[in-house]
Image 1 (tube, rainbow, N blue to C red):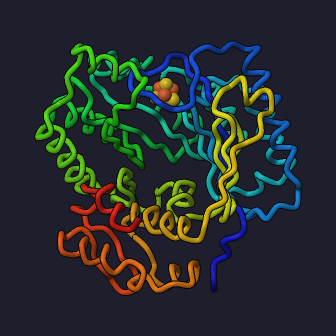
Image 2: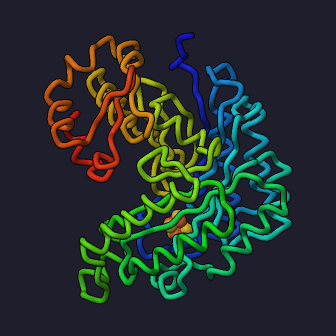
Length: 377
Ligand code: SF4
């Protein structure tokens, strides 16, 4: 059966508040907030959700993902209002998955139970490290013990699907400290792990610290060894790599994130939220003030060439890679005809392989990610 690419496959809701801005964070998140601002934000979010016609093409099992920021700072009453608005407008029917991002420093059993009762069935916890000095340097608001406790409380509340994030390549980290953090995370029994190499973004605290010589990045060799360690140890522990940065036990892959990598349409609400209908991208105002004022989203009409490129590099992020038949169906083009040179360059370097109808990056190709993607631009 040909898959429909016009229906929205997932719904994203952005909650842009955090208790404290982490030193490395460049996301649309604000440390300055209070009950009043959160209530205003929820009002505007509900208004935005209700602006959409109820007859939009949405899959009945469209996934739901509340990300941030820190959705777990939102009082339950406000969270429930957003969920109600999504249900009322047909965005939340029988989701194949409903994920909530949370910070281990902001959850308690009562809140987690209420979330589970609302219908969330997956929790994604930003943990980043289990080393006290690293957590302090990153500006995280939780301790290593609180991260473990959050996982235990989530289980008690009924969550069976829990993901944990780790960062590597952070100033002060060593191969041994990353190994220890990974072991501690695996001991909690989470079924999904995301690992992110630090990207130093201008405007972040860690960027300023590095500029002033107050912090030093691990050497390239050490960062490479951290990467190698994670790539070796996670599969050994039963977590298959299904995307450049994501590992899961069988059947525990994030269904929502796969929508992005499969280049399927998704709806999104909230400040800085970005939606895609298969042909056009719309991004809401990033600034909280502008979003609250109802500033018109930025629209980007995507040409067939841009869509083709994005389809290729989003698909190549995944271990499954790109189906050549789907590429033909979605673009009307033959992959090898369009990307002959890029394909040959990547193949010569051992970055890409073909297996039947699919082409995918090798683990070496994934290591060189961006360089490999550039071959298809
Ligand atoms: S908790 Fe997450 S979104 Fe908030 S500041 Fe830290 S990294 Fe950024």
